[in-house]
Image (cartoon, rainbow over all chains, first blue to last red; front, side, top):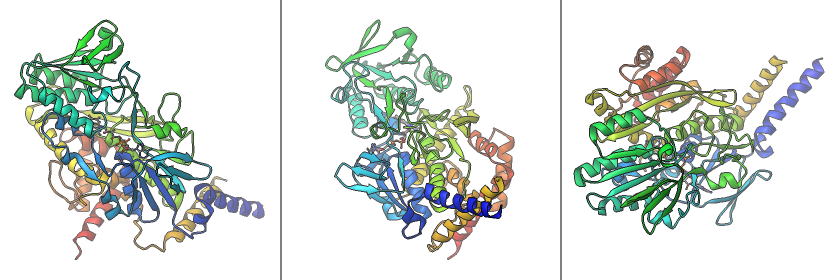
Length: 424
Length: 109
Ligand SMILES: Cc1cc2nc3c(=O)[nH]c(=O)nc-3n(C[C@H](O)[C@H](O)[C@H](O)COP(=O)(O)OP(=O)(O)OC[C@H]3O[C@@H](n4cnc5c(N)ncnc54)[C@H](O)[C@@H]3O)c2cc1C
């Protein structure tokens, strides 16, 4: 009996160590190596929190030197925020949080050898790998909408040059022009954002091009925050924004970039400026590496964000099947923290916790009118489930909404410092 | 058997901690630091008042008192109401202790 117990315990200890770490790590010779792919919201948060623990060697692989946040990029479209004010230098993660930032793209993963291959040819060994590649836009899902078409009809769904392009087009559009937004089917990055975009562009039109109109051609029959948006549109921009759901227009079939037109089953809509937001899937590397299932998104364990298809590789952010969690920067940040604690527990034996998952997205209806939701989640039966959900309500005073808009500014500043590690 | 497993995990965890305790600068990971990570998604790390009240200068008692008040009503902040409802009394105590300890460490010369 004693003998059996001792062997069992010994086996369990060795098993725990070996399952979690490579042998050289288990022997304590070197610090465990963690590689994070993608320096957007999920990946930067993860690298920052792992770096701050000071027990692991953390590398972050990202081809871009800076990150431009999608959140608040609708304020840029309205002329209310410069792109520079939305841009963060990833070197802060190196300078302040001990992260090795590698400016390259991951092109292949080898889970058996635990190596990531980079575009430049380098091979990065790891003990644990985390992938946060965001989304891929499905070019080709709408006929004629490819990368070249996006230069005329921008998606502006990955912030940066696309946001600048769309802003320029809106600026040079004549008063009285029609701005068409093609809204994507579920699931997609940031469910309220197409409608926030309509609201803020309407705010811009109201001041500078008051005869202009906005038409939303939607692949869906309802959308996130619908009541709050429709109430705000009638209060702030009466007659300016028209929303056409899928049941009215049918399938969005094609675009003609030369004619600036969008073709649906029943009709062709001609725009002065067109913002086409195509259907989306997990970032390409996640699909290439077998982390995504038939839906195009990555299934994960909701407590550790370990891939259920490739255990030992964690996935966070927009790329995952997040259950009730929306694809938002806030969700990506929250998931990354839970994932960081799970990786530390696996590699360094720090305590294991149930994840504390939360989302609170600020959405602008006008510069001084915003709403926010607040949703808590728990991991249940292998899925992320909503526990409690609160949101601003139709009919609240202007004062209440002004306060939320003010809070949104504070949130942006604190949140980006949390993700990217503060001023460099 | 359940006991053996949990004992084994504890021993394993202990072994791992020893392996890495050579680095004295390593952050202590505990219940408080885990929850404080959620606070950092909205509250300014430098304690500036930019629309969302700063929390880095609050003492332990104040944090506990405010969190328990937020739990009872959606009124003042539905965001904090949601957070407060998601935390047990023990978790509120742990995060308050952690935040206050960090504030104290920051105040030392
Ligand atoms: C208009 C708009 C408004 C939004 N507003 C809000 C909001 O108010 N609040 C909110 O919470 N969210 C908002 N969002 C959503 C938010 O921006 C995303 O949910 C968030 O960026 C997701 O983070 P992520 O890390 O998954 O992806 P990303 O932030 O996109 O990061 C992915 C990164 O991975 C990199 N990458 C991809 N492939 C590779 C590879 N092979 N090798 C190396 N690196 C790679 C990319 O270059 C990129 O930097 C908004 C989005 C849009 C479009």
